[in-house]
Length: 420
Ligand code: NIG
Ligand code: FE
Image (cartoon, rainbow, N blue to C red; front, side, top):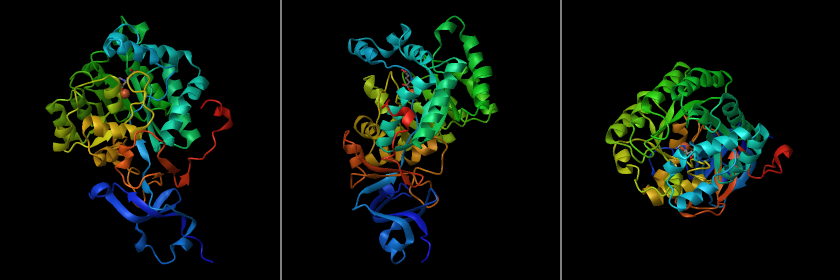
């Protein structure tokens, strides 16, 4: 008997490939073959060689179910201690996000809880959040530091992020966000903190292999453009790409700064100016929109979607999963919110959580269904792509495949089984 050519063959699928310019890159009556963790064949089932079932070790028929690339969540703060449900109540009683931050709450309160947590506790608290994203189709996840703000605590966060990737079989990309907030002990010594982040924390953590990219919070309650520039210059010296929380609450020229450094992305962008858009278009910097934070803060200033479209700036969508402004555990829901709140089309939103999100992480081996790409994909309890944005909640993912293997039924490891 001949050896099967492929490890796995999925038949009778509706494939949203996001490859090419056709709407969703849709292939009806499609088939996709997976081999050695990669996509080995994709196309119309009728174009397969004769007797396709004999070509693969495992064959599954999907009865017309929709298959997409594994979703990519390109902006999260998923590792943190505690929660901030109390601040949610304060905001509903009239306090603003900035009021709470200036009164010592906000990011600082998550810093206190994160510093107090051991590595094991942080892992146990973060694991269910990562599992929830995975269960809803996420196979690649960016996780930022930024609730430690001292060397040991930032290291602990990044180590937990890496471990989540290992234990769940997800790809985790880490971003060092030392310039997230001024830690309380540096209140009178701003410049010393920026120097500590730039000259000590970043090079140390990068040397330990814990940093894939460098981020900062460029904002009135965060850091100035000049402070951000300092950490970006160091990142560039270390060969690390940059990205930025920019123009979330006000226009500080952050997006243009990120573009100047060839940034992977500028994120939030509700207050983005025409100058910022032009700079991003020129540099190929992805616009990452975060409707969860817009929603939770009850913002009214919309990001300039029409102008981003016009200038052909690629748009990605992420959860921004964090305890303060976006306690959101479904990237699919983020895509739906991008349609409802920001008026993206479902196709734009879904390209935003696949191909454009991969680009926002500098990853070119995923986000589309094409030969040679990683075999990270999701079979959905849905038949048409728009359903992924249309259904609100409800556990739509039928099967998630990472590197060609189904993971949705994977058992939690025994060390962490009591934490979900
Ligand atoms: O992306 N804006 C800054 N960082 C986070 C919020 C962090 C927090 O409030 O804990 C964001 O919205
Ligand atoms: Fe964020």
